[in-house]
Image 1: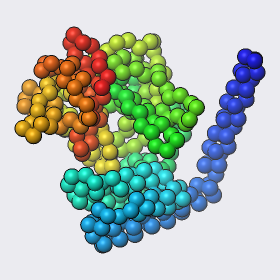
Image 2: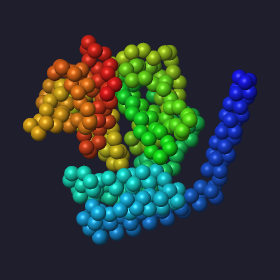
Image 3: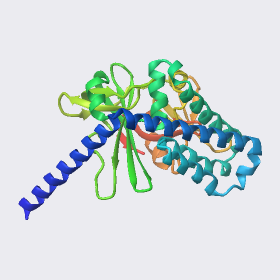
Image 4: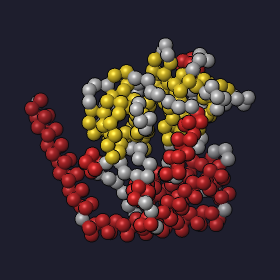
Length: 334
């Protein structure tokens, strides 16, 4: 039985490798690539018309619009092979149910239209921004090309947080790293379909001497672990003040205005409550970031009013904590 199972596993691996090779060869075929470019351009032109229609009809209609309005637009993008935009377009459906939604919805429309315009004029953009636009639309770079041709950075990388999300039948794991020497953030993604497991080799609270290969772009963030130099060891990440983090985030947005999240590693922050009860992470300078978490009690119990190193994902709605480091309690995953 074991021999049969091993033989079957080898066969499945060989067939998967053959499919990947065939897919890569097809993608590199000039005629196939040209057809896709045309389909994507047509799909983005249709998205542009749809966006203009939403604004022309008034934002108020979005509050009562059926989910089909967003889903149909997303499906057309998938058909046009611009599938990376389908998720963000479907995500628009949830905005009218949130406080202050008109401003946020208009901002999301504007970012989508900016991407459409950037794709139309991509030949005029710097190379890094061209790669960013292509990635945001849905063009991918094969992993072997990233490993062989991507920017390589060796550092002691602290694993600062991890989060799993599920959409349809695909589960995505985001693992955030921060270089101890460079202070550089990195994002390692892994995916799993039903019956398969996610990569668990990067553990929050550890540090690994490794060389990462970064995907191309104007703000390189996603990376692959190209080579490791020894086993992982426990480690506490070095962080920044709130102001230092906001400056870092502003610089990243200037390079890639479509960033939907950015990793934060804050040193020596304490938890504070505003008059309305909202929770904040405040540093010694008095600067603070709003926290976005359904259950803050574990973090409150860990800090006990004292300073912690706190990591999380930052977006326009606030900071979603992922992990915390306390001088006596060690690492706590939130």
